[in-house]
Each structure stands twice: as structure tokens, then as C-alpha cells.
Length: 356
Ligand SMILES: *Cc1c(COP(=O)(O)O)cnc(C)c1O
Image (cartoon, rainbow, N blue to C red; front, side, top):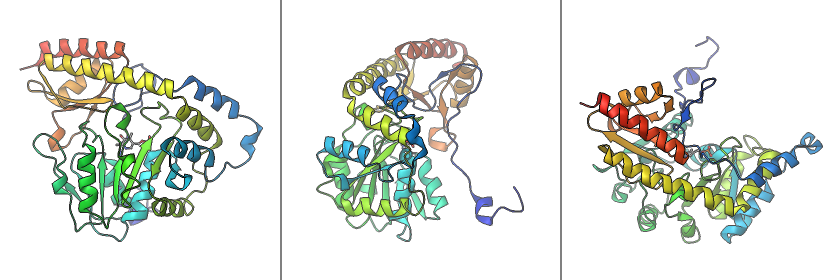
């Protein structure tokens, strides 16, 4: 605290990102990063872009990337908006569609940046409880409200709604924006991108951080009808005209086009998720059915915090959310096959030592 802080910043409770440890090397299964690394072609493109052109500002619209994404989706470029990580795209969407609109709805266990953005932009919000199986019930999302945010698959549960259920939420709420955050969709859920032409209240947000393994490059994007994209552009140009630097555009364009790398690595993650899920069940865990690159798991004989600390002592980082519903659950990112085996070995010995 400082006497110079505004009352607003004194009250602000920022988002807490997962730990990025320095020094000691950990098996890092705490922030849902992709263990396989970015497309080698993308890395080469980034190196090739690091030259004298860096003295110039980048294209404020990142048109090369926008066009690459739009072409693949068979849409015009005016349906795509890119930003500095999908977090920034989400922030612009909260600001552009939810301010002065009414109460924002999202699930009570979801990405914790949503309440943080509501606080930042002073938006009223109402968390809607997940059902007894940690699922979103589309019937719970109906007006009057100022907007709806659904992570699909949801985090930290990994559970996805299918397209009919997303369409159901869109139809129930035709006069507010429904934001579908698809950070993990490439690991097995159905994308709502195909609904964009039909629903003028749908904005789909995706990221290069997870399935394209470029969390360090900071690139995310939104897809929606042009009137929605135009609102995001107004916000962006009132905040930072150049959110994507030249290296980010070069890397993201190439990563987007390298479908072979994208497919190979996401298939590996999916396969390792499936057997890790099964192995955890065999050790007595309850595991939610995930279509993401992480698993939410709980053991009836060990407290979440105990398991977190025991794993840390074994050099393995996972994520724990200290809220009522998730206290005895751990979110475990899917690592390489070797990291999954290391995790299971450690958990197996902790369970035999500590479970009551
Ligand atoms: C990781 C994540 C994001 C943020 O991704 P960036 O593009 O790295 O900012 C957004 N939403 C959810 C649900 C995520 O898990």
C-alpha cells in the first residue's frame, strides 16, 4: 500500500497466476502449458522476423494473422480479432459488451480471471453453481442479465458442453453477448465456431497458448460477426493500438499453418490424458471426464492441500484452488508421457503412505 494509490487500486484483488518456479527444476503440471513445445517452423519464423524491421511499429490490425485464421475458417477477415493473449481479448470483450449492461453470469467454478475482470471494470456478476456432477446446466443461464461467459471445456473441471447446449444458451439470451472461451477446445471438445454465422450474439475466443504451445508468445483471438469484432477494435484502439508485435505475428501465422505439428502434439496430449485418467482411477481417485489438457482429480483419503504439498516435495507442481467446491481436488496438467509416469509413481507412493 502507498498513500499514492487510488482507493480503487487499494481495493483491487488481482488474479494469481500459477507458479513459474525459478532455479530448481520441477515437473511442471500446474499451468496447463503444452509439454511438446511450439512448431519448429514457427520458431524459425520468429528468428527470421528478428531483424532491422523491429524498429518499425507492427501492423496495428495484424492483418496477416487475421487473414490466415479467417481463411481456414472460411470467413471474411472482418470476423476475426487478435490480441495479446486471449486474456487481453477477454478483457476487451468484458469491457466492450458488459459495461452498463447488467449482471454478468458465469459458472461458480470457472476461470478465475472472469471475476477479476468484473472487478476491474466494476461489473456486477453472479456466479451460477455447477450441478452435483460439476456440470453446467444450460437452463440456469437465462435473462435478465448483462452477458454470459462460458469456458468450454470449463476450467478447472475439463467438462465440456456439446454444441446443442451452447446453442440453447444462445437462443435463451438473444439480446446479450454469450462469450464462449475455447482455450482448451482443441483437446477434444466441439467448437462453437460453426455457430457464428447463425448467432449474432456469439463471440468465440481461442488462444495459441495451449494447443499451439505458444503461451510465451501471447497470442489469442476472437471470432464473431463483424459488428462484434468492430466493438473489440474500438476498445483495442482506445487502449493499445499494437498489441501484437512483429515476432508474435510471424510465429503465430506459421504455427497456425503448421497443422501437422498441431495435430501430432494434441493427439499425444489426448492419449496421455486418457491413460493417466484411468491410472488415477485405479489408485482410488475420482476424476472428472476431461476434454482438456488437464484432469481434475480427488482422493477420498487425502486432503487436496496435503497431496499438493507431498507432490511438491517430490518435485512435481500441480494446481490447487482453495474454494469450497474444489478444496479436495487437484488440477493436473497433462505433461509428456514420461512426466505422466513420474506423476503416477509419486502419487502411488503418497497414497500408500498418507491415505486414511
Ligand atoms: C489459459 C486460459 C486462457 C488464457 O490464455 P492466454 O491466451 O494465454 O491469455 C483463457 N481462458 C482460459 C479458460 C484459460 O485456461
